[in-house]
Image (spheres, rainbow, N blue to C red):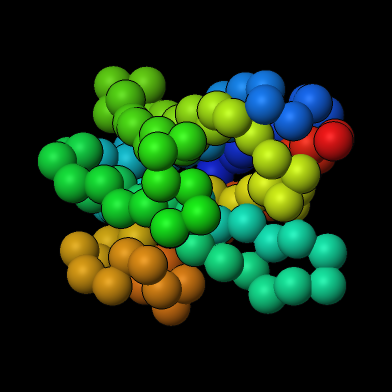
Length: 124
């Protein structure tokens, strides 16, 4: 069974950095692609980044390209989101998600399991 738990959120000043982690307690972590999404107050949940099962390919939303990096450690059943040069508009609840599909990873519909989310607040 897949159980995703995010951590690492918090309050940071603009220009600062945070690293989010998402750990899976199951035994099949290396079998699925992972994604990060975020939802700001009053807005729809949106794609942030994704990584394939073996980490060979990564995908990023345009607003975070060059600032965020997604990575994974299959030995630790964990996916990370390193966020640098944070902006107030990055403020949101960040969710990790797992997908058994290898396609359409930018779409929420591709994902089978979701974490509970972690709050990221960037002050100006």
